[in-house]
Image: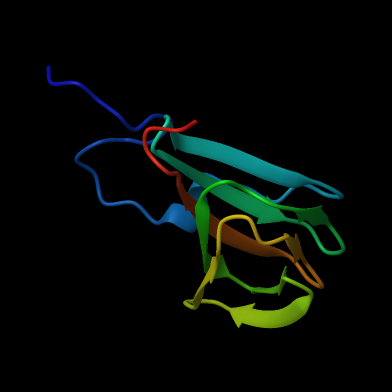
Length: 116
């Protein structure tokens, strides 16, 4: 067997990413698919009214909305992102994610490598 760098996901099988993370009332649910010094890949589901408050990252963060729509704030500017759309939150810029109604997203963060 070769090395596997992804986790919590089936290999060599067609998958619908949004089905791999379920909604839970009053919660943000996450499922990490990869986490290493260079990249982080995580699936999220947000119940209505849930959010990840303003923070920043030392890597560029790319959000792809898999289901529903999200309010993404980057550097104080609010963006409405809907199913099938992607937005990039640049490293070092404060950002937040909020759900006016339930939604699911794939978050990919690419870090400077090697990380300080």
